[in-house]
Length: 179
Image (tube, rainbow, N blue to C red; front, side, top):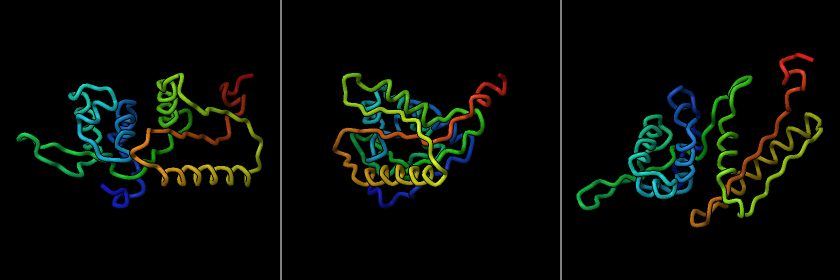
């Protein structure tokens, strides 16, 4: 399925959708489907799940509208379904004050599960920026991510890019206002 046919963004708005994307296994299934459709068997092999577990998680994602069947074919009398993402990207609601940032939690879990001997570029930088510089850096990071997403080739190995540009809580806020 050409990605040109996909809507740009799927906005997670319901509790069912939020529960579906909150699970790390389903996050990894969506990562498999980000570039090309796959069957339950292919998903199970790529994520390292049993077919039954893979089928269960894909059904939940499908019911939530996050993935969809994009083609079918008959194989020895059985209909094989190919699933794909329902949109190029998924936008989660703001977690709210003190709420977990699911994308960052999943990204950290994926980083921790990545081969330790593989090439990595991980860095944290503490910056002091004007509001204008902050906005400009955020826009540049998003543009860079979009540029490389467009260059992505499904035949190449996966690489994940995660960034977070934010103003941390002041120390007195982080400690509940006690000093």
